[in-house]
Length: 423
Ligand SMILES: Nc1nc2c(ncn2[C@@H]2O[C@H](COP(=O)(O)OP(=O)(O)OP(=O)(O)O)[C@@H](O)[C@H]2O)c(=O)[nH]1
Ligand code: SF4
Ligand SMILES: [Mg+2]
Image 1: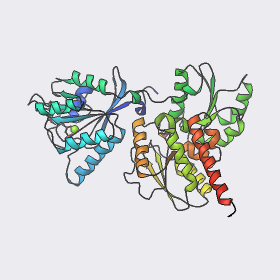
Image 2: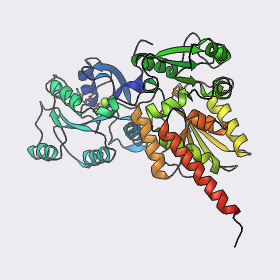
Image 3: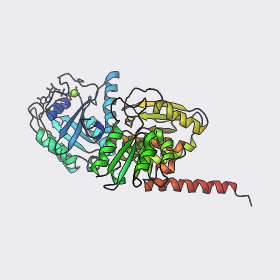
Image 4: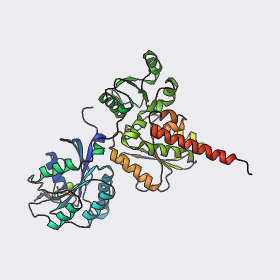
């Protein structure tokens, strides 16, 4: 693992109409020929991604998109793909040509505002003409940074870089920690990593590597074992570990082998907090109780690995959920950046840990579900809930645990009311 994963990079996307110079700007910013440039409108079709270091921000991912004004059947598809990039945009660059402002720019600016995505407006091709002063004044009054550039000569590029750095949202640059805050400096976390058919050859998977790095960054110690060796490893320690983290698939065995007073959770639950909103995803897991045979469940996996053997998303989670519900369910699978814009008819969304996604994309999905009134949860939470070890799996997270306990109390109250004899 030599490069910062994409999911940990600030995503900066360039939007605008065709031929305004988006790709030329990307090439100028990265000083490389990343995206094809031509005088023909509609040159960029699919989003083009380029990871780079933008100091002092650090690792970023630039995304060049197709013109948002593209027309015709194919053009509309390209524009829709460009709009889907909004879901993972941390910082937007809205490019216009010499400040030529139309409904497209206005609507895009509105949408970025409603999604609370910071934006910089660029008037490119300033060698051919300057932007109308009225536009500059209007944007300034609205607090939107405005920069004039000439992508072909590099004029204004420094201003644009500085504007990017100033506009970068601080909370996204500094997301909640993975596990470092759960283990005091010098204390020990035990990580349980099954090496089975699904484990990639010769390496650990990203959530495991990132958890190890996060613990080291917080001056904690960590011990990595397979589930078979856990009991013996714990017995050799002179004191209990501060935390045990397991792959969710080994939850039952690890829960049985870990003393009850030791806090236990899974990688996927750590990532529910790190990439998304743990309390919201815990609330989503409680909806598993309301599932009925025949209900539709979306299973979303942020990476596009080829499923093998008893794949967790294709085989294991469907099996555990069917057993819990006591009947068949209608499962639909989504991978990568695909996520339905219309959630009608969906009863539950179950998402993976999202380690390759940026936090903005996961939060966009959570927001979309919340707006549609559809519960969303994640793999680790679903497994812990359907296996009956939810409380244990939430032991390191007081606010999530509190939500669950209040839910149990409310349920108990309802049941008691139901059995009260009529007076
Ligand atoms: N004079 C001048 N020409 C520019 C400038 N920036 C880009 N161009 C030219 O404008 C044309 C379109 O540039 P692109 O970078 O392909 O524009 P785009 O917005 O990516 O276009 P699509 O991918 O079709 O949406 C090319 O011929 C560029 O050489 C600039 O600052 N000044
Ligand atoms: S399935 Fe999700 S959590 Fe697992 S490796 Fe892929 S992106 Fe990361
Ligand atoms: Mg282009």
